[in-house]
Amino acid sequence: MDLIRAIAFAAGFLRTNQASPGKPYLLSTEMGVVEADLYRPSGSPWATVLMLHGLARHAHRDPRLVRLATALTAAGMAVVSPRIEPLAQLRLKPLASPTIAATLRSVLADDTLDCSSVGILAPSYAGGQAMAAAATPELRQHVSGLMLIGAYHDARALLRHLLVEATADPYGRLILLRRFLDEVGELTDGIALAIHTDLTDSIDQTEQLPQVLRDLTPHDREHFLTLRDDAAARSRLCERLLADHAEAVDALSVTHAIPDLLAPVTLFHGRNDLVIPPTESARLHELLSQQGKRSRLCTTTLLDHGNVSFSLGTLLEGPATLATFAHWFGSLRGPLRNRR
Image (cartoon, rainbow, N blue to C red):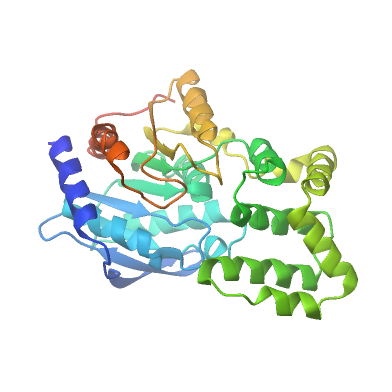
């Protein structure tokens, strides 16, 4: 049955290039009202999934997530897709985890959804934050299974990758720079505006940065361009952060959540991911297994860090992808639990 559902999901994904967002849905939480979209299947859902977005300006309305949620309904699931404000603001903040936990509590308490447990699908940075939320004492019995796509486990390794590696994705690097320049007191208003504009240009395919740079002070312009373009300067910043601000870096790691996690974890990671390398999911899988947690890992060339690509070669990876989603679907039925 789970494999049949996985096939229905894949078929729904392939035939849905431009899906419409779900029904607007407001969640009342202790942290305020959270905007969300609700997707329902044609019949009665057999499972409910909380689908999170990553560090993306379009948040829960990102076309890739809308397509994914629509495909999940083809497999018979109800999907709640909330806007997590710290993530929508492209901010690397531990605050995302309490916001996710509050949203999850609201979903579980909603009589119209009628669910005693919820599966979670979360990409990128949201994956680790979702795992931390799922391990909290009052929620861990109610999360049936986690699907983490392109997740990381070690903030120090991620810091070194994005700041030092020449092949690292510039978008992820800029988000990290904004977070840690603020930590060291070097994020002036001008540099923050330059980073924001560079990110926006990348998303919208615009060219507003040159004008912003012309209006900056010479110091801010030089400092921004040096850190953006000079690997040696970023390497020095990385070493300074690890030496003097290690606690702030480690606050973004999520391995502390593993001991209290009950939900099985399915890890899905693109082999060509330039934002978070697949070695991060591999290491997380290893740590979960070492602590007696149920974990399954699949790496694939079907996606990078959020974009799916198809070719004759990637078609050969279809069976492994179907088996991975079937495994996650199986965990949503509740028979597989981690031991504490």
